Image (cartoon, rainbow, N blue to C red; front, side):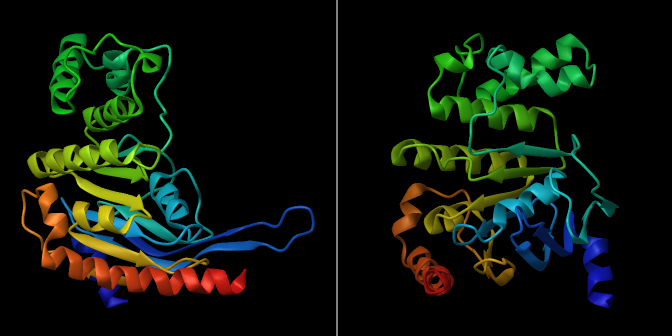
Length: 270
């Protein structure tokens, strides 16, 4: 208990004994998606949640976002309980969740308008993040006019423009081709290196988990819980060539073994 009090005092985000069981449907038994899970995230940290498909990592992220209610446990952000969605958490999904009737600039300004921020200030913030994500010249384009990568750049800019305490990303590059995905990884990491937002990032891709993070939290097969936390001490700023370094390859080897053992459990149960 003393350890948990200490975490609550020093952590930006504390996931404390959080579990989630979904009720049965049409006579089927309940499904335990998430076993009691605890994770402490420090201010300005970049944590990736890595696990096999169906392990509950997205469920855990949605609980942090306030989009799901835990069956047990609690989530604290700056020591305050999370009880629902809020502007203090910026969420980016795998699907492109832009408003199709708004252009790039208007999408980025959406949360700022909701806060009734003065228009001039909205424009200044939007211009800053348009430049950050490399969309200068596309401010008046609508989502249907943009590639998948450009839509996700807009979604990331929209989340950051609202100045959240923590950025939550649920496999945000999963729908992109390999080359675009690699470029988006570099873009997001460069933004983090300059702005140092606290980030919790869900992925099933081992290389992505290592390249992006300061720490990788590995989850078990369903019902998921964190089985290991692996520090990533690769230097910043990170260049894509680090992915072939001996230190990177050793981390990949270790995490591959961790994930493979969980994937085998799923295959055995199937």
